[in-house]
Length: 473
Image 1 (cartoon, rainbow, N blue to C red):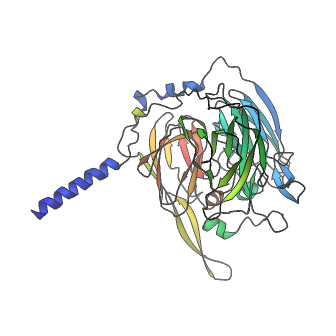
Image 2 (cartoon, one colour):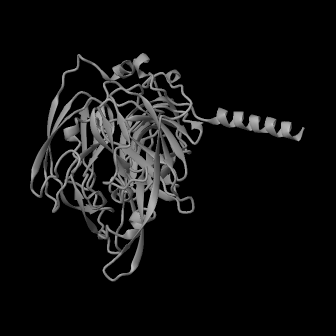
Image 3 (cartoon, rainbow, N blue to C red):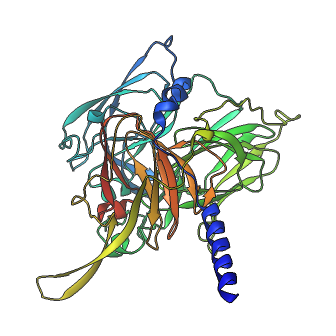
């Protein structure tokens, strides 16, 4: 009798466990018609407009406070704030880079589906731009969204010195209305007591344990700035995180706010923005009702040490300008009913390996190198080899005790499940944080053939091995 009860109990437990497992995608792209899912990007009546742009990476003196000490950074901009390039969907950028920094450099167009020979990853697609050398990029903007560009060589130092820029590609139409727009780049710097930049970019603790957390948190290279906006207006805030490693938890609970865009395109349905996590090089667009009370943007990633990043101060009007957010939504992703399978097609393991070596004094040292499928870049094979439009699910399994925001070059993916829980919103992304000891299931539908990088965008982790390639043919 006891044996029967035990067998029944084990059977019930097994059935319950199976019911909790996430469903993902079979390779059924042939009968779904995935090409049709992307027709909202295509407008063959639009003519391409070409923009001629020159970028000159150079040393730039920055004032984090008005009338305060100067700090020397590297920049594409001629002012304190980061450069913003604006264009429209279906425009073409011809960008000539004149390298004015004392190192070889490159420009990677983060999040843009560029031709492979414009991705500019030294050692994978192109050679770096030498000091005072030039190179012209040709970038067709087939996708709308908020994007970035940054070096992809000696990235720990060059990005740590502030070398990045913003690219905003306007869609043909917005499915929502807004009165004001704010672009907020959240970037931290490590400063010395005299406000000079700490130039120790090779500190072992940054690479092997956590990451390079810095002591000066800025928005658009300003510390705790205040912005004035009309009361009762609706603002579209573009949040961008170009930090080397810092993850932000943004508290917007005091306002009527809706998330409408993540990374790369509109999400399937706007949702309330209460606490928003933004890992390195993610982007998020949020509609915020300004109201009549002051709004303080607080970072709560470290709950015991909340940090005030910025303040929005409403300017009084005699009447309300906008009472309710006006959103006219339309679908932006394939039908989720097509996603039906029991297990992911691939599992990619994110972990670390301890390495011992002997230095010239014959003393033992230990280091932690970050791995993808137990491989350390550049001694890793590609983790995925796919044909164009071949749909697969991939599970990113984080076995380590550190977060890993993973970034795919040249294409995008859809987040499906996080730790057995289906993601309530659905949209296209190119960067997703996989928290410590968690897993995340992604749907990847390659649209852009060639060899692309896939790496952790905590740059210290990528520098210490957490990079690989994805091949699409």
